[in-house]
Length: 436
Image (cartoon, rainbow, N blue to C red; front, side, top):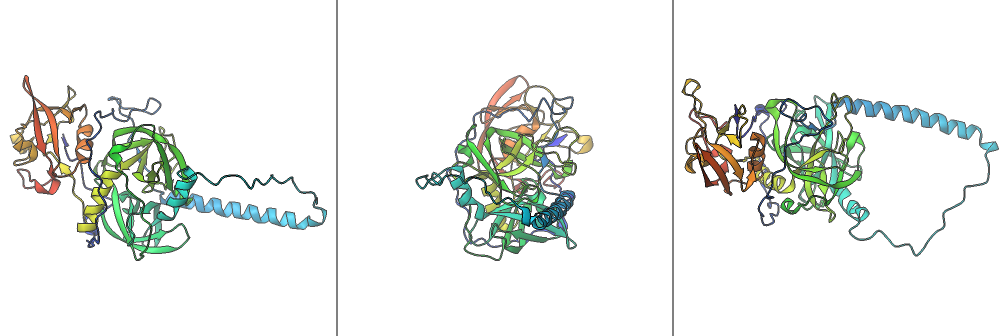
């Protein structure tokens, strides 16, 4: 049995650490919403990766830089530093016999043009000052690092929830000029794997959040972040696919459902929370997860396999606006429980079970008001075929409360099309009084 809204508790972010609400000065700009793509691609199934009996590949791994990587990078820095010292001593001790001839110099072309406006070089130069490194500590010890970027000039920064979740609230933000500022956590959501931080700075340069509904497969994609602690690292690729139903997380209780943008731009541990840019330098996604080869983990070093996943910017914008305004985030729901044991056409709303006091449809929910019943089969979402529960969940999460969607529903031998007005998850209650 699977809830439509997924499993929301996050053990790495206990409820006792409730986020502090911060008043918003001005909401992030919202471009006109366009309809989602007409087709929802199949779930992530990579032939070269291990798959289960259902053909599902391993869950993408989150890409924060854990404490093991922090230690490894530090040790490498010490080794290379020592080697550099020995090399410098050797050169100095043989200075008297050094060859005086120099290598030929490259010709200087004074007519060479500067980097073309809109080129990758130009885009990166403009974006780098707005991309930061996030350092999360607990008990005074660094426990995770990741990336983030400025979303408002008055000090608001967006990153992944899983980057800051291991901390006890001690967060430092390192800017591209080397300055470091302490940050407070405005609010987080493990459901979308997003977090908003606030530093005591003004006059920052925010990155522009693009309309991710306009992203196309094949578009140029530029990832910026701090993989393995290497600040201001830039990688280049394309948008490989859209609407990937990605469930990222290490446990079932900390799963984030993402209607993801897939890219082959190299993404490694530490890239989490950094921006994925288009050719105009606008943010189309927030880098969040990668697929790993069989047996690999963040600690053992999975490396990039050209399968990175980013949270679409439209989803991030709505969530960030809500967190800044209220300190928390909601997500849109239909109000059904889905049967994960069903393997027929579409996805099935679970049957009512009086013995366990289980209902397939929440009373008064959008599904209930639209006439959807327990045992019904949901075939399509806005015309896109639905074949797995995760596809319905991420398609719903990509919308906003108040949006109207069209579902094709099969009840017995008859099929009908119904309009459903989505509501926020905290606006419905099940028969036991919970919001699940």
